[in-house]
Image (cartoon, rainbow, N blue to C red):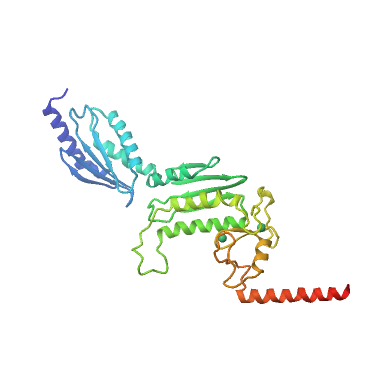
Length: 333
Ligand SMILES: [Zn+2]
Ligand SMILES: [Zn+2]
């Protein structure tokens, strides 16, 4: 056992070494370096940073250094786990100077685990997943890979979390799916839009809106894809005929946009069969525009752009033709 004087000398030597060598760690800043506490801030980006607080325990360096980690943006659960790993690391360094070694270890952890910045969002995402869904984290490329399933439909998604998350836009790519292509294109652009709106202020500014701050995009994007898309659309019912909008077997998907069973997505997000929607859009009442049978929102669709007045006139014209035809038929009988 070292005497208190020897211990004191060892600590003084380590404090001197920390002062000289902390700058070898990229992004490190020495906040305090005294006997009662050594504090080093280790930052990779504006949000990826940790303040490591060290205290010398009795008997140091024969005992592991005491350590506390703080961060504004990394989750408590992650810091807790990292603290335990660092404590194990300190035990390996018994008898030697431990502070710089641990600080380097933390920096390496931040570098090697870029997804640490969204660890809470990832655990929430895992709770959303259902049996058959899969999630893979690729720390090397900072990507979250999702394989989502519902019935016979699937969707593989690749999310790329930028280093400067959440200040830069998160990449979203639907790498493979068996949804009809016009729907999957829409899902992809919608996800991209959600991600973009998290980091870019709206073009038309609302003077009353609070100052725009970028928001983490992983949760809103995956909530949309997992809850609203994959676990909803395969079982969605056409509000007009109450039958499944998409075929149960994806190989029966109709790709001809004028086919009776082609699936149309209206503005409010509900799915209709082409003929069901066509019939409904051309049947009165037209006043105030046609409203979705499921949610009562006004239906906007580029295939049915007639104004209520035009639709009314067309319908009246068609009815008149039917009557004329009926009269002719009467003569023939
Ligand atoms: Zn229908
Ligand atoms: Zn609707």
